[in-house]
Length: 149
Length: 56
Image (tube, rainbow over all chains, first blue to last red; front, side, top):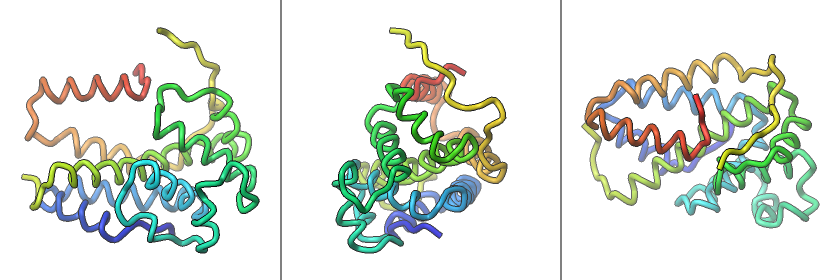
């Protein structure tokens, strides 16, 4: 099971306390996403998204070993990462920075490594983890203290 | 600017049904919220579609 910073999990739960349908479906999406792709890929991409977005506490929480986490900023060249890791991380970076400009070759590289169904699962899982971090960041920025009504 | 892309997924490629169903439930539950007025909601939906290059 992939991980998430406890502070992110708590923040989402607190904000959505008055909208249980939304919270429960968001939680179910998270659980399905973490089960849909290998834990290593989920964790690599979650940590890379956190580094790019500046999500608090996420980098301090991981199922990966410390050496891999430390090497992650150097993923294009570091030998801790294989071709599948690199394809998925390249796709992740473009997805976060400018998803509408995703070039075909980045998508094809992931599909080549994971297969068609695997690629579909990967993109959905990436969307799920991105949504959670962006929601947390937005609500932090708005400085919302209690639950939304 | 209109960009033409090649198809990226085979016709029969699908995410897991559990994941797809969870996403559908999550999106439906968010759409059912009423705190934001319909005009603002539609503006946000259109902006998100533009951001994601979504044409559906």
